[in-house]
Image (cartoon, rainbow, N blue to C red):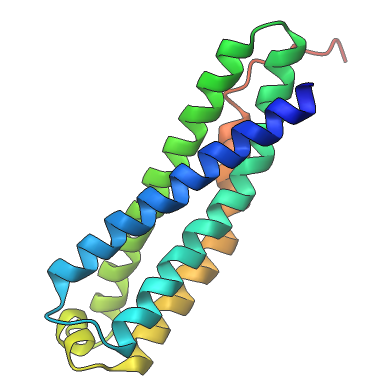
Length: 157
């Protein structure tokens, strides 16, 4: 039963995470550019992929937290921790998009918004690759940080 509940919780939170994130990023990109073009679509897909990578890394910690609290007869705390970890990953993914957008804008001489409007696919792909690599780099550390909040018992050695 524990494993079934764990899978169900991860499915529900994962769907909510991805759907809400895609809607927010889509609305955000619509504000930034005049029209959708190949560059915007490439960036959009990269942002979703990087958020998915973060979600994959954090989901292991979420599963561990739920299992720990379930075994401690505290399912409510397991669901609470799982939800908080998902919210933290969502916020981090959104912040990573903005911070990487800022850094790429500072490092390149082009204006990112103008280049996206001009359908500069190379610039969008560069930004997308930066997002995906950052997600692979930071995801394990984000998971370790999340894991540190689970009140595991101290071992005597």
